[in-house]
Image 1 (cartoon, rainbow, N blue to C red):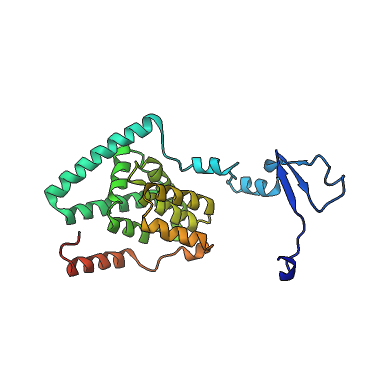
Image 2: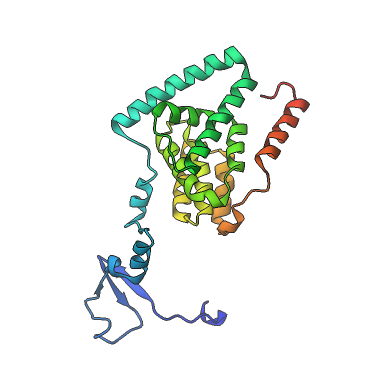
Length: 249
């Protein structure tokens, strides 16, 4: 398959138990019969990553751990904070109505985006809980999505990692989908795939997660992870829907 396409194979390796063997090299001085030890930290690529302040995860499991849900007392505290935020949202909606509540939710998420772009972070559990609940409003999620510009990808990765790790079951899909999208923008394909797995585990029918999964499976480059709609256009679209359908909230 490769040779007819003009692709030359320089070597083929077998890797097992911390060693590797060449299928093509027969020189024992170069490729000993017992195999060569894998020395990842000494590899030029690993050294180049280290000099750039980056590192390669030892395994997919190690990479997944960087965006895994919090556990123990932190998870218990987030569960309580989420319940309190749910109660507060219900009371606010009853008091000021759905439209004003939506505006408050939009500001909550927009303020978080601004904070991370300014190299700050959201660490208080009640604030994180409010973000996860705000994102259940699809308009709020789409407004956030429209703000995911590639030049801020590293800041957005920090934001959605923090939110996704603290999101409670039933509230993971939105932030994990946004995390996957920004990871795709940042050429972090493995993180994007793991985040999509988390999103679909939380909600198998979540449309944004399915769209990003299709893009990743198709091998689309990060340059395609840009948006054609601005936040103002997103807002106008939802406003038009409400005008056409007065019962739409």
